[in-house]
Amino acid sequence: MTASTSTRAYHHGDLRAALVAAANEILEEGDAYSLRAVARRAGVSPAAPYRHFADRGRLDTAVAVGGFEDLRRALAEALRRVPTGNSTEVLSELGIAYVLFALRRPAVFRLMFGEEYGGESDDDRVQASQQLHDVLGEVLDGLFPGASSPALSRALWGVAHGLAFLHLDGNYPSEPVAEVVERVRSSVAALLALGHRQEGSR
Image (cartoon, rainbow, N blue to C red):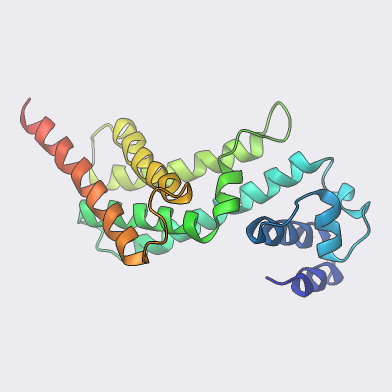
């Protein structure tokens, strides 16, 4: 979204959405990020953001919550592309969607999981994060009925989240998307194979 698009959104009456869109733009472009900069990008007065956000922390929360919602949509789209009965394929596609989202929107992804929350209690961000975990929990419950999935859910999220940050932090610089996809796919398959071996040894 361009600055002019953000300004048009405000002119249509949704100041909050225009400010969040402007914040996303600034973050992903790597420009200096502040309430004043966001107001300038949205084409409003420096005081305008305070109608919706008491401080930058609350704007951060809005951007993060929007990021979680976008990521959930990306995961849902990934689920629509794969057969529901193949556990390795389903979980691989979820991991791939997760990592590719991080690579498409690195600054927002870092903000989503950053430690700087909007005050002592950031219930909106916590809830949005939990809803994301609920998606994986529901998928695991469908793939492995009657099995306890929290440990596997944490392990799979750890793999995807770890790979996302390994790529963002430059451990795998300038790789083609196909190589990223294959790394995620092979990592998920290895984790599931290890779990199956452990189950078989009991």
